[in-house]
Length: 154
Length: 251
Length: 69
Image (cartoon, rainbow over all chains, first blue to last red; front, side):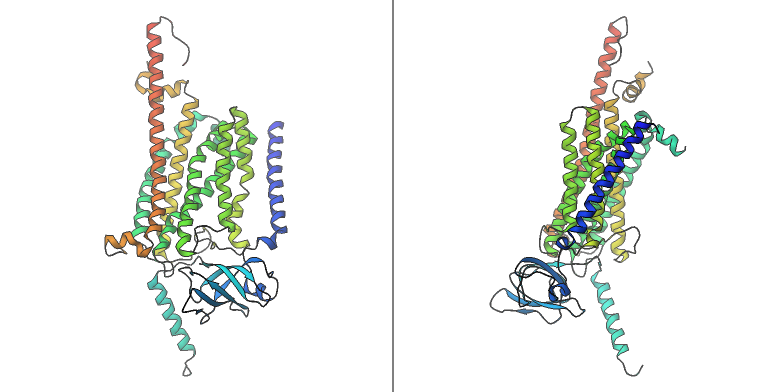
């Protein structure tokens, strides 16, 4: 390769590596701030800052949704199904996909008491897509499996 | 033909023009067939999602648009690298040809994403890792376009756009891995080449058809633009004259 | 077919606005870029043909050929 071309090659590669390296370093340094939301264990153990607008997320705990009959106020518990959970209070319209067991992201302030006052509630959905008929079948199979395993006769 | 021979041939815009003729037609026909099939399938025959209902059909345009927009950027980055190091004219033509469709696909990905997010997440827009890095990609496309419009000198223009294109490729892994590195609102990839699909075939197949269709459309679009530019640059030559007036050129 | 009537198809179970906005934009992009390319190609051909005609006309009226366009 002729020398001028070689030096251009080196320059291009150097620039690419320099910019990539800088970006990677920035991302690692800002790790804490980039985390898009705090999961339940970090909310509970004190990692998540209080009295500051932050985002937190997890799953809506079954049976924890309490709606006020006279207003749009609602309370529910967010859990990670691994032992950590916290209560969220929100006034407003919940997204269509909000339901028990759904992944949820809340934006608002965490109080010292551990209660989260949400200003915004967003529903997160995973990358698993399923037609309703298959979902019903899957749930039935699961239910049958659970019934079998709890059957004392087998 | 060896790789080295191919490389040297690419130095000739004329060779490229003639070589690409069957490809342009092929991509065009394939795109038309795949996209017509995919759109009808996705809109009318694929099932709903148990959670999202019919809004899941937006996936069949959003995912292909996003994927191909990224691939076109990578192609543009490669062309930029080649232009910068080897000064290959065809690479400059390739960069210019990738810009319009790449921009439109990125905008389409962002728009369709927002339209999908509204009924599902609950918001048109979220400052999330993937959405922001895709927006950055749109700005890169627009920026390179503006750069090229602003610089009249062909060599300088080529080198400047090549540099931005190459450096901007580092944004692509950020788009891809943001959903894995960080806790984000945007879900992980629905479509990867390596992992098993996270959806049943009734949903996966129309998605695959649409992804292939948009790739073919991009191939057709970008090659066509390259050919347009090649003819423009070589308009004084005999071979272009033969293109334009095949009968008369003999005389 | 997942829908029992045209009305249902348009309504998309309440998500019609979103689905049709997304697909509408897609079709606009696909058709728009195809048409734009066709138009540009035709324009280029016409211009080149015109230029070639000019060149031919001037070479037939002069006894000596002119150099390139």
